[in-house]
Image (cartoon, rainbow, N blue to C red; front, side):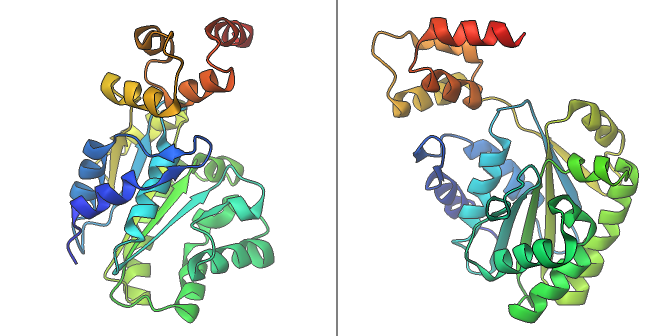
Length: 265
């Protein structure tokens, strides 16, 4: 089933960012690149690694994509956050058969969230028992995958090699039309090793901060005081959504924000 990018983009826009309380801003181009060029059909399901600076919005972008694909009948999409310790926050969306199986697998079998990338066979075996997978397109997004690799001492090269085989073997075993796997990382040291493996059954995509127009739209939706200069905030944040949120948390007090940033240096 060919993915309608217009539906996907509208779905991304309808996602509400939890800690901002507003609809997702921008990223139409990124949706087109990531979904339009990566989700191309059976046989193209190589690992995709998405990287970018801290706070650029990778995690929320991933959740927005999962939200969007939930509106497409033949797709199953799930986001797994390896940075979370509270099991109810590990999986998105909640209250689905997929999330129930994942949380049960973590709590009753694995005992550790970061084991998930290492136990994909078991995950899909359990999923097949409770939901129909045959003919479906499945997208699995794993956030901060390096936590798993570091803890269980699996090299990036071995991880890529292992995933390259698992994707196709699991797809065939459970009868999926396609199985796509996207992993996110902000660890730039680890990213150097991922980049060395480009072309070996793996793609890399760089997600950057918001462009100026999208940054200003974000500020507008968050309701910045009229007296504040968007040019000044652009120079301070560089279009980084997390920094914009931090500014809002300081009630748009630029002096307090800058002082706090200096203390962190």
